[in-house]
Structures are given as structure tokens and as C-alpha cells.
Image (cartoon, rainbow, N blue to C red):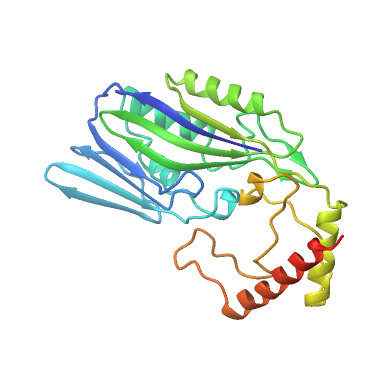
Length: 268
């Protein structure tokens, strides 16, 4: 299952250091690849790889570059928002920017399984909890960030919502939006999955076991449905990355496999 949160506060309280803006991320389900902070005056910035500092018109502009990754595998990326906040955390910003920064660093940081929040579950079939910080924003109108939290079949969704709520309130923030999606789980022993495995082995000559992934697919929109391809074992995944692409020969092979699967599933 999965729950997406927008955590923050409308009309955040200003602090001693005037924060003009904080902006990072492109989507809730992508690890923040870039984050920029603009403040009035000078601030301390720790030297880190991927951090640049500019001075212009009496302002300090700090930019952090991370590594994007799919929200279901945040451990494969490097979150630029966390990197930036770590670089400036020695400053006493005050106000709700300070609150948001401390919440993100102390309850999330570089951790991607929700252990500090008490929401880390593990299951042999459906994996481990993942927590992705996607979009971060701070302006005079709103301080907020998104969380994309995905959890295995033995998780307790109510605990996820309650623990995130408690963590936010501890730092004077709240839940602005919250949306959950039930887990799609079809047994590997089902007729559907067994037929698909048979087709794959016939067409490729490879014996494969079904996989459970954290990523959401359109299969969730239907009953008794699973995602089938088109990525092959051993391929370098470029999903949600710059220059996302697919090999043409593999795409053609996938079309052939899909056609054979449609024929097999249509048989009684």
C-alpha cells in the first residue's frame, strides 16, 4: 500500500534570518534531484560536494544537486533537499523554516525506510517500507513538503498516518493533505500469474520468478490484474531519470510476449 502526504503550514512564521524561498523537487514520487535556498544577507554553508553558493543583490543563493530516483527506491538516489538542509543547519533561522528543517533532518534525513518514525515493516514477498521526500517548498504563503510512503502487506496504514501526524505536530506543523492507496497483491500461485510466467518462459527461454515492486502501475485500477513487463531482468533502469529510454529490440520483443500473453489468457 501507499500513502502520500503534504506536510506543512500555511502562512508560516518568519524567523531571524529572512528566507525568501526554498524550492526543490519535481514530483512526490521522485527523489529530489535539485534544491535551491534563497535568503537575505549572509549565512553559513558547510562545504559539501554538489553544493554551490552565490551572492547577488544582498542575497545568498544555495543550490544542492542530488541524484533522482523513483520514489519506490529512494535508497538508489541522493536527496538534494536533505543535502542542502544539512549544509545550512548550523544557522539559527528561527520561525517555521527552522521547524521544517529540524523535522526533515531529525525524523527523515538520509534514512529511507521510516525506522525513526516507527513505520518500518518488512515482508519476504512485498519488501520493506520506503519513505521518499519529493517536493519541498517554502515561501511567505506556505511551508510544505511531500512524502511518498510505501509499505508491505504486513504494515498498518493507520500507524503510518498517525506517526507522520505526531511527528509534524511535534515541530508545529500539520498534515495539509493525505491520500492512501490500497496494496495490489495477487498470489504468485494464481492462474493469472502462472499463465504469464509460462508465456514468458516459452517466448524467452528463461525461467523467471514473479517480483513484488513498490512502484504503482495501472494494474491497481482493475481486479485480478498485475503488471507484466516491459522491463527485462538485468536491464539498466532509467525510470524517472534524465534521458529515460528503452531498447527498440527489447520493445519489439515485449510486444511479441504481450501478444502471446493476451492469446493465452483468452483461452478457457
